[in-house]
Image 1 (cartoon, rainbow, N blue to C red):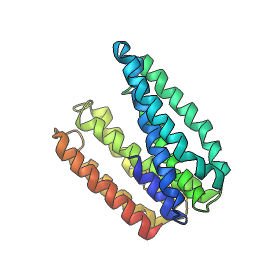
Image 2 (cartoon, rainbow, N blue to C red; image 1 turned 60 degrees about the vertical axis):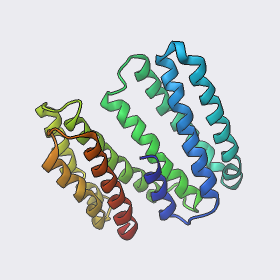
Image 3 (cartoon, helix red, strand yellow; image 1 turned 45 degrees about the vertical axis):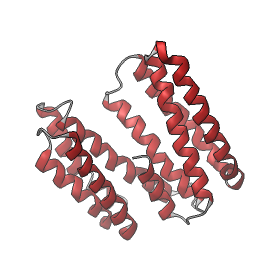
Length: 225
């Protein structure tokens, strides 16, 4: 999930060698956040986990230096990222990590990676940046709803119906944004949800379906965006 929005932004702009460094920074910031959040739950392992937070954080900062020199505006992404991460921290402390709003914030963090890579590739703070975030966000939120219907919330009609309605409604988004061909990458998750939501499924099968879904999403988006 972390790489697809980023790649979307790279393809929407102009690919540069500095994108490699920015991705390394982006990846290691994510890796640093995971043990940090786990440390909030596991007091006995806190020192051990925070050690990895520091290591990954240092790597991320070092990788971020050159992209920031090239595009200082990247610094502004730190503001929403800190705010969204604070929401994740709140949910961890209240033992509600599986809340849909927590998923909402986590997916929005990943989606902002697409905006950052687009900006580094010569893009601006414009409508196209917003559409990059929107398309990635609505796609992966659909995945979050679908996964809930086949695992934790399986058998609950409200979640199944929510997932089905959501996947129908998001087809309106490309039309609203004036890009009707962008409906195409959202057809696969729509069909998947109608066929399999609410049914028992092995994690491996769900994972394979998600890999197929993300690949078709980025490939079709690249062709029609």
